[in-house]
Image 1 (cartoon, rainbow, N blue to C red):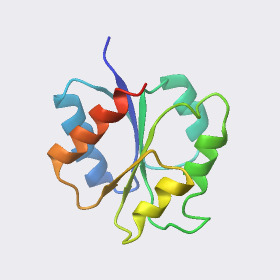
Image 2 (cartoon, helix red, strand yellow; image 1 turned 60 degrees about the vertical axis):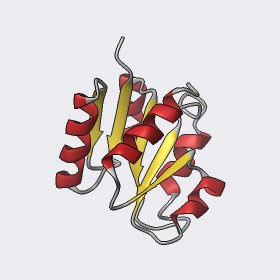
Image 3 (cartoon, rainbow, N blue to C red; image 1 turned 90 degrees about the horizontal axis):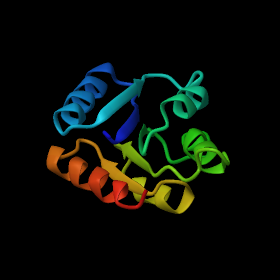
Length: 120
């Protein structure tokens, strides 16, 4: 059975690149460019890992990440935050299981995804 990854990325180009990379690695990929209806989508797709684009480390910027980790049905799913923010590592204290700084190295992204899949 293929491992499922849900990618929430606001930039269409980056989203398609990540989707292609993960599919080439053999994963089943679900995507969204918006937070609208995201909890229903996550519950329906039952991903093993979530990749989440976070622009700001402010409470508003991390709201979705914190909400995922607070939701009983999905809190167990590792959240890997993708971010350009200089202080993105702060999100590991707030809600993220791992951080991938943008721009990202493809091999590093795959390595982090694989390491998080080992925890599920």
